[in-house]
Amino acid sequence: MRFASAVLALWLAAAWPAGAVTKIVVTVIDDKTALPVTDLIAQEFRVLDDKTPRTVEAAEFSQGGLLDVMLLLDSSLLGEAVQSLAASLIRQLDPKDQMALVAFHSSADLIQDFTSSQEALLRALSGVKFGNVPQVLDALFAALDGGFQNTSFRRVILLATAGVEGPSRVSERRVLQLARRNSVAIYPIYIAGTETFLFRSLAEQTGAASFHLPSLRKKIPGDPSPQIFEVVRGRYTLTLAGNLALGEKIKVELTRKGKFRTGVLPLD
Image 1 (cartoon, rainbow, N blue to C red):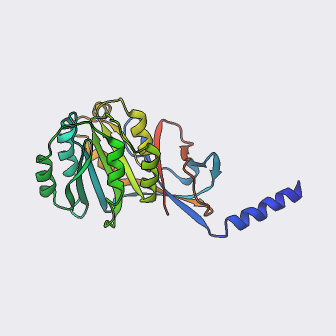
Image 2: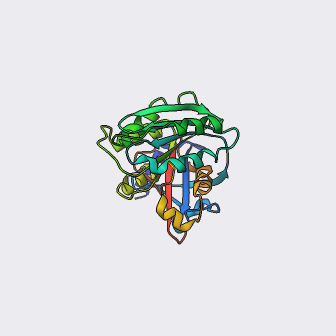
Image 3: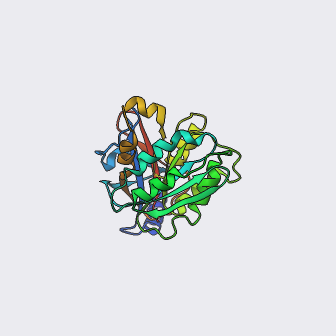
């Protein structure tokens, strides 16, 4: 038994050299209020990498930082329902943030490239035409595949959608792989509940959060956009012991009592 323990200790020392660490970005929101949870400490996080526990050495919460936001707007037959939301989201940009506007239905079309001008974005939004069937996963893949190539800030997709998915050709797994490879957090904001599982999965596996608008408006009277951006801007950076590559099935749980939603995005 002592021999086996010694062998395990030697293997761990070789696999995780002294000082070697891995970092992940984690978003945590209170499910009752949809507000970000800001006061967690390292010991309250439990990180599982394909069911294998990883030691959390440090947890640092930050609020702010510049953003490169791609607003992916549903321009299908049902998409007009989120047009006013899109305008409100545009108005939440800080002066040095950048946003691009991409309209999607059966394809994804760049309507306005990255800019800090709210006026240019609102003008582009007013010209969006609505029609055809929405293909959410295809649109996400197209946006992720080179859409952030010349950006330098934290990468975020705001997916403003009626909540209906059409016959996409690309799988959810391929979208998630590309999002993680490009360090892009996906925040779905949707009206209908037919694709709740898909939207929650996209958020949870890219270090983000999803928002069901009717539920959110019951918790927050008035415009939900400021609170959505409060969640987008607030995140934890967790430092994990060891530098072993993280798998696709990484999961974050909390030991604190309550009902929370978490999203996790590994960093290169």
